[in-house]
Image 1 (cartoon, rainbow, N blue to C red):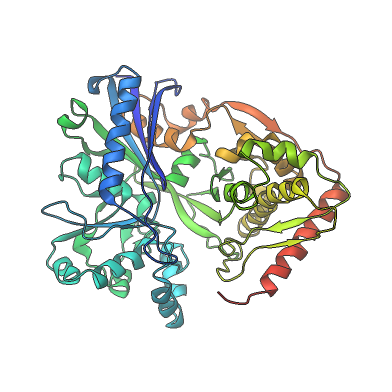
Image 2 (cartoon, rainbow, N blue to C red):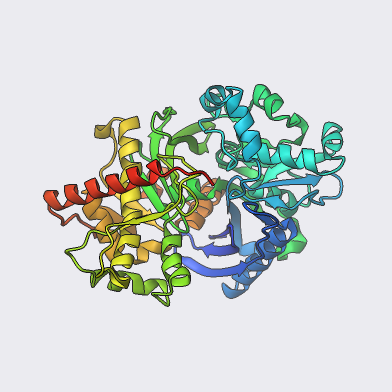
Length: 499
């Protein structure tokens, strides 16, 4: 049994990847599922779609690899974080569609909590800010808006879980209601210092303790899947939220190591070791992973728009047909122009956290065309990463932080963007051989417990560099460009006109 099956349940699709004992990929399968937008700012998933797509891709991946259940040492799960499911303990039926992490319907609940002065206490316990992003207010909303749900929850009839927890419950035939510390740390209900659900937070957000799952290490025996799903029972022994799983897949086990994942948005995590660092620069403090009862913490910065800026060029402006055209197009831009895109299409994330501002272009001339816009869109991702890195250095003494950034995600395929990132950070940017770092992280956690993979330090030796991008920009040019970006951001923040 030298294979591990990783379930990567994402926001728009479910994927399964079979990894060998040398971490090479034996097979992969992917299936998209429907997104529901019932009102402005609302995003929902049908839990049954999440479940059926997950089972389907697992079966496809096993078939492609010509493997059966007896060949699989363990299953690892990684998931879209914060997305919230509430279901009936007896029947397994969800009482409402899953409320997705992107959903903003609980903005009023969050505003009320802030106005009542609760944010400092909540941040001190959870490491998070009060925002609709997190699960706690989503649970409260479901209990308040589904007829009879609050009464049923009080009687112990309903269960709450993030997507990992819901999948685990279904995979084990309703026997196991458990999550891991990384997912628990994204709920607004979990004390990241004590490693336990917090009664004061539960009372404040009006969530009954009986709904909550048990919290375990990220690598642990969670349960066994029922035999009829995949033709035999398989142990489930690894769980982590997607960004934490990517951190593990990038082997960022040493304090000071930083990884940045570039998908629709961008998420950067800095390993701070066994010490949780309270951010003074609007970063989140989160649990990176928990092994053998020992929590490792991270500072996290979120950028809302990364790959979606390229999608805007393609779908909104129609100046490219596919994402791969963007780098070559940017390379043809006029070097005498300084065009800046601040892509605040849905507000600005860390370190600004302003949901009201909107995007803007600066420095346009009559000669500005598709090449300059492509250049500005790709550079905007690099500038935003620079802002996150500076916030992290301010929160955590710079001499401790590694100077190298490990990157993964779809945008990293663009050599132009990665080179510009290295230039503006004035630091090396490392792209690994295995880009499926999120799934690899889940596989590692499961394989670690199953004995397929070694301890973290030895696993880190398996990390392989595909390409290192080294900075190659003069200090004068870098300083000029960063100053221009800072002015552009200042202009956008000053335009706060409300929604």
